[in-house]
Structures are given as structure tokens and as C-alpha cells.
View (cartoon, one colour):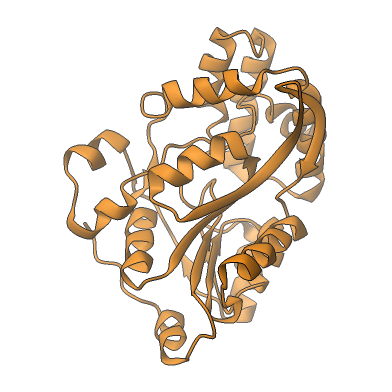
Length: 280
């Protein structure tokens, strides 16, 4: 395992006396994992009849756009509406079953080795690990568990009679992430002024401002500019590794944060149309 060198902000955090537990909040896509998992989950969702072939093709193109330039606020709002509409009527237990069955087999590359090492470093320092994602909780929860995270917070869909009814109950995006972080800070006694946050996207600026020690990871152009102007650390993660290699060759402290599977969409494949339209 590569050694994660603590940043100046890490040292500063430990020199102060926190009034509660220190947490490290991690965004998911392009921060922990190397790409959107939309394409990876298109096949199992297609095989189970949740999406059609047209959605699979849109998924492939949308992932390309996402990796090329990320998603801005308007695109994220379109994706929220599209996800809610497409997922309406899906059986929640079927979604969970598909995720469980394909968690360790479908997605490769999986997690940035640098992210895994950073998570392990935070755990060694006694910090709670929190995954904060705009993706659906049925998908984010298993990822967070695979990572060895202490807790996760994600988008919630309303459910009636075991099926999604097409309404987003809580959208864990933008200021919604801050709301979720504040709720966790209250319930778990987190000292946000001494805590850390990591993200790649300008849309997560509220999340980064919510903590005392924000860091931009593989930032988009807007976030890179903002981070540079504020003097925030900027990290580049570029070495995705497979989950199997992590499990077969565990390395000391990395065991606690073994790996995460690259799953990031509430309905992998459903997220795509908003991005496709946003680039027209």
C-alpha cells in the first residue's frame, strides 16, 4: 500500500482540539471511483428488464459525456427528474438484489488506490468515514460498506407497496449534501470545523465549504479554479485497482478500507438521458 502523506491541513486539524468526532466526507464518482458506473450497471438492469436497449445505448454515451466534462447544476436537475420518472414502478427489492449479486463482479476498474489509501489513513487517525452521494441509497449503502465506511448518506426515493412511486423524497445534492452532513453532525457529534471533505465537482462546493478542511480531487475546471483561489489542496487520483486484487492481496491498514465497487447511479442507466440532452 502506498503511504498517504498527510497534508498541511491534516496536520493543522490535529493541532487543534476538536469539540467532537472528526469525520472525512467523500463524494463518490471521480473521487473514490474512476468513473460513473452507469454503463457497468446497464447490463444487469437490462437483463432483469428494468431498462430497455435504447436506455443502454444512451447510458454508454452519457457516461462518455460525464467523463469528458462532468455534470453542471442544470444537468443534475434534469437527471433527477429523469431518474424519478424512469424508476417509477421498479421493485425495490429487485434493485437491491441486482446490486448485491453484481457488486463484486461487474465493475472494473473499481476504486482509486489513492482514495483507498486516503480512507485508510483517516481511519488510522480515528476519523469517521462518510460517503456522501447523489446516487440512490440502495446502491450507495453497499458501496460504503465495501469501503469500510462508518456511514453513508444518499438520495432517497419514495416507496409505495415495495415500489418506487416516481418521487424523490430527498435529493442528496448541492445544499442537500450539507443538510445531510449537518444532520449527521448532530446525531453523531461531528465537529465539522475540524472535519474533511473530498470532491471532484463544482456542484459540491457547498459540501466543501461546510468543513474546515476541504480538498478538491480530480477537480473539474470550475472547482480547480475555485480551489486554487482559496488555497485548498488539490489531489490527483489516477490509479484505479480491482476489488479482487485488493481482496487477494490485502495490505496492512488498507484492509479496513478494502475497496469499493464503482456503482454510482440510482438506476444505473437511468441517469443518462439528462446528460445526453444537456450536451445537445
